[in-house]
Each structure stands twice: as structure tokens, then as C-alpha cells.
Length: 219
Image (tube, rainbow, N blue to C red):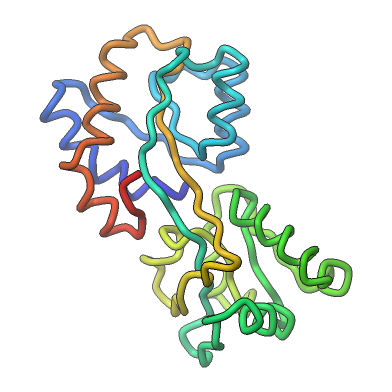
């Protein structure tokens, strides 16, 4: 889901450069990996680097085809009607998190990182009833915008284009976690050469402005 806006915008460039139409299906990373393992008919898989390594080890990707696509940091957001808390230091982020009436997070890498931070800060048990996990494929920002949570925690790229919220900044370096998304050729692809050609466009310098516009950095 985190890369969907970038990929949809890059589809025209891929077709222009390779003559192959890029049809993008975006869904939560956990569900996407399940479909690949179940033999879903795809040519290219694009997920966070950790799941991609596992898929390659399981023979679901063409060996050696994984290529870094983009980097994404984690950010925080509040409803646009609420004042933004200070998140400039680890202590400030801990205070903002512990003070949240309802904290929304995702099923992806950013959600896993939040759980580790809560353990690190000794807040996991005390906040259990104040945590709201967005369903797979549902942006955290959309729930924050609706007022279901007063603080959202997700990839910056997932928050940046959602109306009704204020992105209050990325996590400070002491607690930041950068996700690297990678693209690879599916082992079941009937057109591995075509898939490689499309991936080459996706990771080219021509694609960099699109990635930055949607809140990611080239890998």
C-alpha cells in the first residue's frame, strides 16, 4: 500500500520505456506475500526488503532479481483540528504517544516498529486498550481524519496525501526506522525479461521525482 501512488504514477513511464503495460494491484504487505506464496499470477513483486528476502529464500522470486526501489521513514499525524504535539526528541515522542487517547497504527513495518518502541518505553501493557490497528489496506491517516484516533503512526508516504490530518513530522533519528522497499521478479512470471525491464525503469533516476513527491526517497 505504501508505494501505490508512486507505482500508479510511474505506470505510464514504464509503458513508454518498455512497451509493456504496468497493471498495479496494491494491498497490505502481509496479504500480498500470502498471495505470492499461494501462486498468484504476477510478474513483479514489490514489498519491504524483509519479506522480499524471505520470498526469495522460498523460491518465490527469481534469485538475484531483488532491486532496491525506495526508502520510507515513519511519521506521526494528528487530526487537522487538533494541535500538533512536539515530536522533536525521543522523550517528546514518548510523551505524545503515552498521552494519546487513541493511537492508530498499521499492520506493516511501521506498526512492528511501534510495538518495539512501546516495549522499550515500558508502555506496552498500559496502552493495550488505547491502540487501534488499521485493517490491512486501510491507511492509518484515514482513521485519524475520521476522528477514530487522535494520533497516527505510519510510513510518511502513507500519510502525506490524506486530507483531514496534519503530518507533524518524521520520528527523530534516535527512534526512526527506515523501510527499504524492493522490487523483484516473481518466479512464476512468464515474462521475466519484461519484468526486469520494468523494474529497471522503476529504479531509474527518471522515477526519483515521483518518489519524492509521494513522500519517499530513492533507494
